[in-house]
Length: 192
Image (tube, rainbow, N blue to C red; front, side):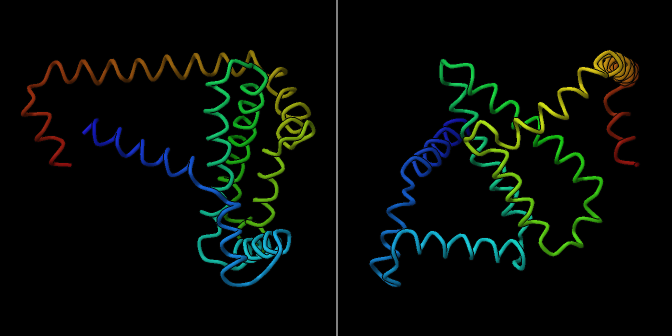
């Protein structure tokens, strides 16, 4: 199975590295619409925007856009000798995680806004933009970093307490498992 996974991984990496958006655009231009590069890119952006507003699965499309490119760039950053790109993508993931956390608790309200996924997609693109003033840098430096630095001790204490309680609970479960015969554990699982 690891051989099959390696083969699948090689096929995915090969497909991603061979994907040529400019070639695709050229084929679309020469075979059908006779549009310039700029016109075709504009049409594709408009279609994507309309899909994010009205289309089925807009949340999946938006989350894919916010995940695939940054994940790929993060891997490239890890593999590069430079440290700056690692920091840039770590900051993106901190902001992305904070955004997803808040979105989870407010999703029932946000889904009533018809252009929510379009706005979310634009926001995520701004956060990953290769600009010095991209969204991730601004949100991290103005909000997340000051908050964490101000509450760092409380956060560390809470993590320590929760980790200790989780370890105690796991130890209790392990003790219970050691004291019971395997047949008893399996039968009690099946009874529930």
